[in-house]
Length: 179
Image (cartoon, rainbow, N blue to C red; front, side, top):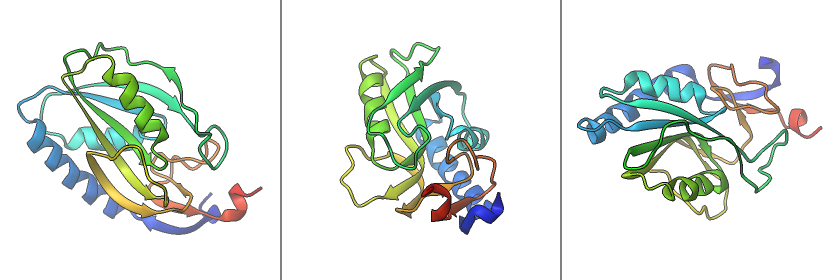
C-alpha cells in the first residue's frame, strides 16, 4: 500500500498539530454552545474523531453520507445523499465536518440542503482545501490545510475505498488512478 504513494505530503505530527490548533479555535467560538458535529462519511471519519477529542465543550455528533466521486478519481459533479442525519437540526448550531474541499459541489449542495432545515447556525470545517484552479461555490469557515491539486489519500481520504487507513496524507502515484 505504501508503495502506491508518490510522496508523503502531510505527516502524522503535522496532522496532529493542525487538528489541535483548529480545535482550540473552534472551542473558543463554541465554548458556550452545544453544537451538533455533522460528520460527512466516509472520508471525514478519521478527522471528525480526532477533532471531536480536542474540542472542549459539550457537543453531539451525527452522520450524513454524501457521495460525488464514486470509484473514480474526479467528482461526478452530482451529489447523492445516501444517509440523512438522525438528529433534527432545526434551531441547532451545526458544524459540518468534511474531509476535503475540492470542487465545492458536495459542500455547496450540503449547505443548501441543510439550510432548508432552519438550523440556528451552519458552519463548515474541512481538513483540506484543495487549490483546484476553479472558482468554488463555497468557502470553508475553518480548515486545517491548503493543498495543491494532486490526488491525495490517507487519513480517511480514499481512492476506490482504499488507502483510508494511512496515518498521513500522501500523493497517490498517477499510474494507480490512471488505469
